[in-house]
Amino acid sequence: MSGMGGHGREHVRVAVIGSGFGGLGAAVRLRREGITDFVVLERADSVGGTWRDNSYPGCACDVPSHLYSFSFAPNPDWPRTFSGQPAIRAYLEHVADTFGLRPHIRFGHEVTMMRWDAEELRWDIDTSAGAFSADVVVSATGPLSDPKTPEIPGLAEFPGKVFHSARWDHDYDLSGKRVAVIGTGASAIQIVPAIAPKTARLTLFQRTPPWVMPRTDRAISSLERRLHRQLPFTQAARRGLLWGIRELQVSAFTKRPNQLGLIESLAKANMARSIKDPALRAKLTPSYRIGCKRILLSSEYYPALARPDVDLVASGLKEVRGSVLVAADGTETEVDAIVFGTGFHVTDMPIADRVVGADGQTLADSWKDGMQALRGATAAGFPNWMTIIGPNTGLGNSSMILMIESQLNYMADYLRQLSLLGDGSRGGRTALAARPSAVNQWNRHVQARMERTVWNTGGCTSWYLDAQGRNTTVWPGTTGEFRRATLTVDLAEYEVVRVRESGAGRLPAPVAAAAGAASAPADAAPADAAPAGAASAGEGAA
Image (cartoon, rainbow, N blue to C red):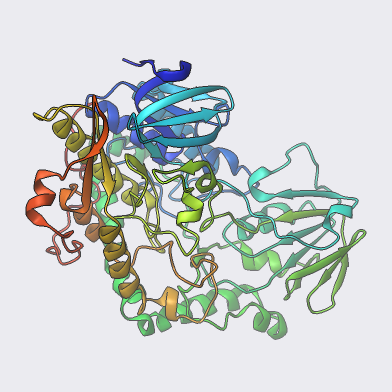
């Protein structure tokens, strides 16, 4: 049970930050591990994370629905093969209700600062609505939570409406308006076809054209849904098939980018079916290898760009002069509203400025030369702190839910190890601190594998890369490999920190003392990964 910590703080064993897929998944797993002394701190007034915040017209997932869901919470009633935002948000609300998570969630609690107390071995957490302390923090804020709007000269003086795709203003009617959409990422290619029929004129500012493949979306029939409800193994088989196909594709992205030429041909054919104007087709044809940026899925994007009331400016937005937008190539366009589809703070997450570790340094300062975390979860200098969807855990072709569940395995074993160490003969509260040598070794291993991937060699600049040009976002392997690498915590990669009556002291972990240096990253495990539809290791009945 939670109680009062020092300085009037409510103390819990675990504090989870965020209630998107990562946060809710962590909460479910905590309960399955028998841990009920936890809170989920959520800055908004409802669950859903990025699927709550992104409610723009046309918002949908580019991963098949039956793969974009928890293995422990299958949904036989997905309405479409690629479901839209309302269905995904409803699914997350269902998960919160089904697994009894709402008593643990504190809505309207935005974390403003968290500091490691080296004397008490706990995290002191300040929020917008109260103070907490926790033995362990699980940060599940996600990389797609804080919108990025570029600094454009003159934008502040624009007389019309301005908003980001992740903060859509549903009270503003676009009907009959001249609208500019800035950016050509996954959000923009959904927004353009959704709003083009109602705007007076739509202008898309394209800095770099994306590769776009058809989105083979369809309604899931009532017969399919009934079959999945009555025979759950059919849904598990469907999920496993979707997973397996994507696992087979990984080597082309990570080892043999030249094999992607055939996919480029299919993407060009997809464009040619809708774009008949050779000049427009030339503007829409990327000059980099497909896969270097995320491959986008849409069957409506190119038809929308072929409309007579839609213009493409093949240049980025340079400045705003009153109601006139000026592109880098000099093109001028007068508009009534600007919609930014310019992505998120992925490699410079704002939450990192609010985490202060053992040496008084913020996580942002620690990561100033690039994000890195041991097995994508723990950072050197930040004991008993871990992140879900951490550095180099992103995917370019499959479902992030698979990676989240792998990290939940790691979280569960981390907490088991803490309990075992805390119950030992030395007694007292315990923390695990990732060894800098282990973090660096893991990062070197990941970056070495990254060198031959399409994300690094494909000739593009993507949001996968940080300010130094390093790919600190994507995992350079299969989800099966990552699952094996995160099944258990290797104590040789950690220093055990204990507190006694005399104060905090460092004692070597028994395993670490025997093993010495951190063990090699587990990328050479056998290739017989468990099917993605199967429950994660250690997951039993709720």
